[in-house]
Length: 433
Ligand code: HEC
Ligand code: HEC
Ligand code: HEC
Image (cartoon, rainbow, N blue to C red; front, side, top):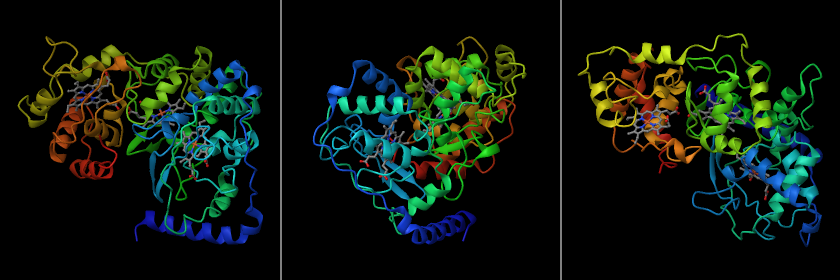
């Protein structure tokens, strides 16, 4: 048995034992269904605020199926334990949360328990949402309850034993759920605290950007925000451990969050694209606060580095023979879009690739995913799109291409690359377009 399986099986046994011991303690009652929605209690300001908060929390990103109605649920979320389907959170009384009082909604968001008393899977990031203030929670509720009701019953989640025993999640919560609003750190200025509140609460940045343990819980302490994964992509470290060739500055973070793109680092692709889209709608003050907080995870004194000089250095002279297969593939498939200037060097690449975090990371996954899937839904329409090369290039071709780019940018080859391309190709075949 490989180590991962051992951890998972060991974890499963632990969950079952704890669950059995805790059955009596874990009973959650049903909260009676409300017969009408208290719309008169919602002010227009509250609804508008709730809409922004929902964008910050990416509710619609997870609660909308491909081509489905907004927030009607049914998106399939693969997990190590099986496929989990998101719920309908529109105010439809039968298939959605129309029957949920504020009390029921708040219990789900803070404790991960649905209106009838069933435990919800932590694929729903309630460990982060539990840290939101009452005022923000009420605005979210007001907004969701004022949206159109959609009658749609998403597919039922049916995991294998023991993960289908929802009571087992009580043990998981006992270990990993720390409810309570994000606390201010008195030693820090107000904008830092505001940033911490947004990042650790609704923004749930750590859900993707923090590594997880064998029970799929985020690791804590020194591991916080040091890089995790999502849907086959790596979510790079947001700390000074970032693999980006130039250090991130506060201005870089601001432009990345506002536009989905940073000239000195690259684009928000894959699962980060919809997150960046939600961020771009937030106020300048809140984005500034998030950037202030994230910068405290970095070495503030690091010199920003000169982007133009680095691009020049990385693209000036070809590092391999120009008729090498990797260059030929690049010219045929990529150069039409990825070049700075037609009259520039043969390997003139749009600056963002020469500085791209994906091409400089220790793991090849994001570069592979970008080529396999393309950039179909960028954070903003004016960023342009990139076609998927899944059906145009073989595993070996993608590997040769990427390792040629690595060599050009002064990075060592990624080892075992064709196999890794094959693995990600298989793993993401179902979600491909
Ligand atoms: C990362 C994906 C993800 C995000 C982001 C997300 N949810 Fe969910 N949510 C889920 C999943 C998955 C479930 C179903 C869990 C289960 O079946 O145990 C769920 C369940 C729920 C439920 C319980 C519904 C029911 O009928 O049981 C509520 C309420 C809810 N989410 C509200 C929200 C709100 C509000 C937001 C935004 C602030 C949000 N969710 C963001 C994944 C997500
Ligand atoms: C659903 C998963 C997910 C969530 C939630 C998420 N991210 Fe990301 N993030 C990613 C992925 C994946 C990438 C890599 C994207 C790429 O290479 O194009 C990324 C990249 C980034 C980068 C660029 C890192 C680099 O070095 O290139 C920044 C900055 C970032 N995210 C900030 C945030 C912030 C701030 C939040 C919370 C408000 C957040 N992310 C929430 C998945 C996520
Ligand atoms: C039709 C135009 C087009 C073609 C062809 C194209 N790209 Fe892209 N590529 C883009 C756009 C647009 C982006 C995202 C926005 C940006 O960086 O400006 C992008 C982004 C990328 C990224 C960064 C993704 C990330 O997560 O940071 C990589 C890596 C990449 N392309 C590699 C390639 C390779 C390799 C090829 C050839 C197989 C290729 N591209 C072909 C348009 C294209």
